[in-house]
Image (cartoon, rainbow, N blue to C red):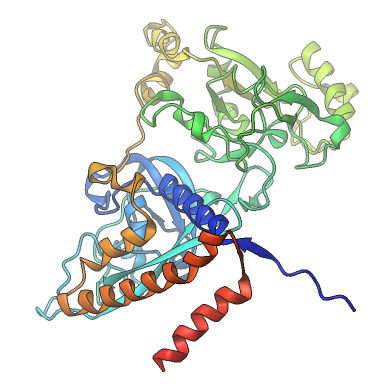
Length: 454
């Protein structure tokens, strides 16, 4: 029987792969994680749901960027992107059931009786968005009580790891669709929605033949991750981000949902759930604001079914009982739910409506001024000198060692230098001669080191 071919890679390829992983990690974690945002109160910021602490305390726990690294590194986290008016829950009494649930960035390293607490080493895992992870270690203090007063945050299904109307658990390694965040968020809590779910399809029910094919560098970018093409976070358009898997290949064709507007044509999306709450208000927005308003039909399983209902929708604001579709609706005589897509540059036109004689419209806008005013997302400061864009993860590990007590730091640096030098010596002949190094050879290298240390 033939032996299965062993996977091999050259040392040069290995080094290049590690450099690429480090670059991805720096892009995901570009900021200095040294300050918790709790003291800043209710702000629009990047939020992470800590599923570990949520289970331990039987309540949703949302934390800021810095705490996700410094206090919850070993926990199960879900990145939620931006949320408005959010206060970091780390270290508040919401985490009273979490052992050492105090915020390590806000509390002193000494305990209340003046004694210094013990130190532990935790593995920080950076999810790169691909099926690989990068880890390095840091040291933190124990015996930190959760004492701070929690904020008045609101929580939606995102804090349990679920997204969209289909309530799907988001898995960045398997997700193939495109998702959009609701800019209004009044009813849905700024949830994320699949493009097909927005129109009312059962998620992923459309066949390849039913989807449109458009070029990723042509008129439509739907289906392509545009996170790296977005304006800076302080720009009002920053929330209109794709939640899709990374795909930035010029000229590739993308399968997109028919009748869904091109991402190049609209600035922000507002879901039908939020629009329904103020349907009488949204109907008053003019063409300078709204690019299109698309109906949300429930339980659609084919393109033909959706288009048939769409034709009826266009001829009438509601579907009558005589034209009753084979879908579940609460009231047949209710207006059809609609999602709104606002044009680029809509804010000045929306702000102008604050001078309207329509008191209900005026009051709505004044109550939700972020819809037309500047709505920046807070970002922690970047590392001094932009070190995060040039240093390797091994350098970051060395920086972390500097925060340890002297005896631990010296011991850690010695171990660090030892493994670094040995690894470089091991790969040097492979790289110079262009030879391949197998996984078994790498495993044997580390096994030999362990045997020598026994």
